[in-house]
Length: 311
Image (cartoon, rainbow, N blue to C red; front, top):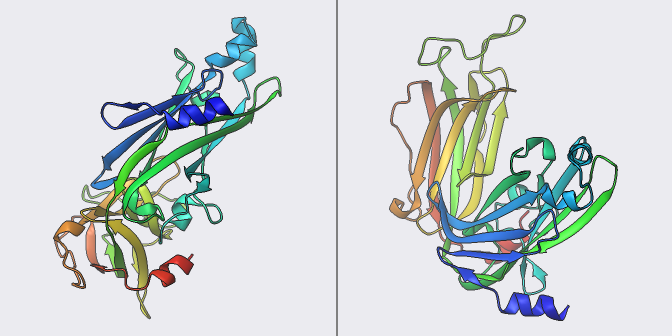
């Protein structure tokens, strides 16, 4: 316990905004952090986690035993974020994207069948927008905990924990981003003159997926299968979430499929160029679109209690 406290207090910060803490006896030997990382126009931090199955070679020393140990093995880990001893909560609009319950809880499968066979490792990265953290603006000191559980091919159980070093960053000012979706209609053929889908017993209509993203994190979604249109005739569908100053919100319309997703159109809103309270529409023609109608705006947080109580 004393050693853990010393490790956390004397955390080594590496060049380039990276910090690491190591536990070489674990399948997850270290949790790395890159602060002030920009993902698709959004500022936050990136968590780097490797699952290293070479650790199991100490138990299974021959190649055949090691291979059997990894066959049918199932491993997963949970990421939690701490400020001191308190788990950090998701900010307004990020509950579904980052949480299970009231705190940030991110679950990731780390099964050996997807590992690099030469290195026996799996690389995982998770991007967290600064706006997605329910924290005050200004300097913050956090730590990320990775809890791994699973069983190897011999049905032996594992429970391991690895923590990052403490890391610091300045949380920017936040605003509320609002998107109001009325309708959108795609053309019956894509820009190559081909049908979106080929269904012998149904329609060739696409499976429409309208997705709002902060970096690579989805914060809003509407899905409508086998249709050329998404519409809300009575009242628009409204998405609201927090953004940091200068963040960019990207909206994707995709034809989803079990194997491959076909992009239909995308839009980007740069909040640094948006005046508070002004409604913005993108009216640029899109090759695959017949029509679309949605509006976006940013505004100040005027009722913090309302945001704190919203789920």
